[in-house]
Image (cartoon, rainbow, N blue to C red):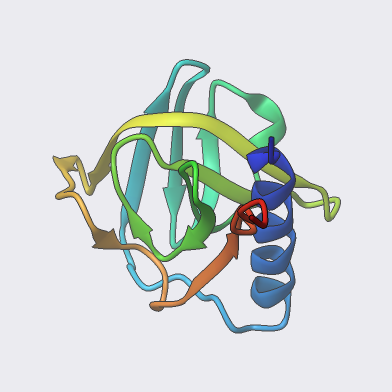
Length: 133
């Protein structure tokens, strides 16, 4: 059995590195708000200024983690269930619970909205080998 968690962690670390290097940058000059089981967070120009999770205030949005059985990826595009990946002020990485919704300037965002300059960082699970006959 393969661990998708390890592949998600790799994708998150690669995305944080790309963000720190300037390869992933916020695209929208707008207020974003997303809701998870942990509460609501609000960002302006990709920086969290208000959150029910106080440790996220000041964190910068890196991208959106999407996980499946075959691959984990951090991309620029939001979709329901994606997890926000944020770089906190102290350099630590935070990954939220899956998002229920996203608003842009108070209006519901469509699935697939790009909040970052388009980039895609993926970690694929290795293919299973077949037993030789």
